[in-house]
Length: 98
Image (tube, rainbow, N blue to C red):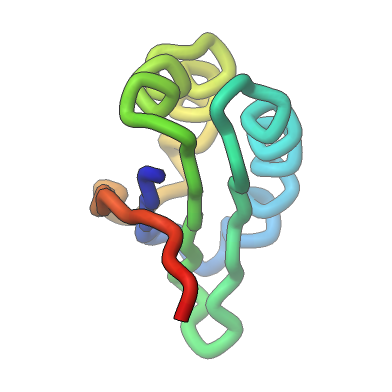
């Protein structure tokens, strides 16, 4: 399993627009083969911050996602709403029973 944390810095005055815009990319991504979970969390304590939390079946599935048309469109549409480059961290994980 591959886990992604993508920290998004948004212009505070554009946050609601970004959250609305994200609905389309979230729906398209959740329909992708290999996507286990793809959500956007709003940081209610910081008006300039939110975070994508993603779970993928494999690194190949994540790479296919990164090259998809809907991600290219998301980047294009959200570009002017962001205040900094998105910080993406990718983790390799496994399910275990505790």
